[in-house]
Length: 221
Image 1 (cartoon, rainbow, N blue to C red):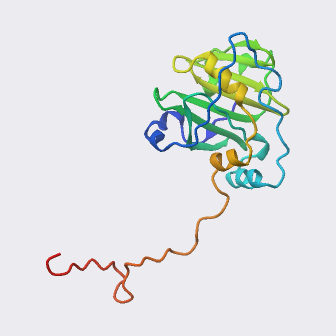
Image 2 (cartoon, rainbow, N blue to C red):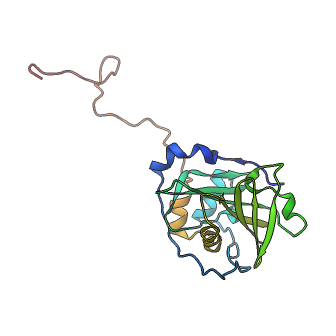
Image 3 (cartoon, rainbow, N blue to C red):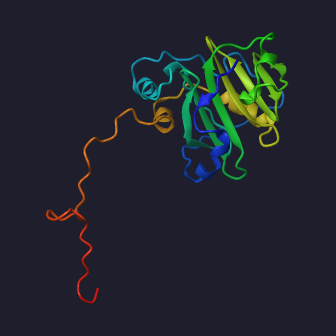
């Protein structure tokens, strides 16, 4: 069973979309293309670099951090966060249609036996249909569709509302899912540096009295 994410709900992202940043583009594969076994790419060793420190500061396992891209979609940075215990989740938005594309990575697997039992988009109790597409699963249910790519010990999922994002775009985003490089890590994950612990000095505060700002206006001002 897929655990619910401890992140900002997707439906609550709409007011935040104007501040989203970090767009990435990729061309869609041909109509006969299927998702190969390595579409999401093998998870790189987490190491001790910037990705590892930023992910661990969020409570995410570094090996579960992925990034994707799709034409017209921009990362909504407010959506980046933890999925379940130490999984990863992020959402991209189409600037013209406001359609949402969700990337979710969590531990587990998907097989022919378990695929119908796992709801699409965390909508428990809904009927799920599964179709093999290469080494991935194309899944539909509850008005959403998803590509699920089993990797070693975890599953990369790219999902969207069926009426908002076409299967071709969904497949392209699944094909584009990969471990982030240094530049992508910088755009994707918040800094691991702690917030400043000392107050910032303001130049308009007088050195006497209660320290209120000096709003004095000269004659004629």
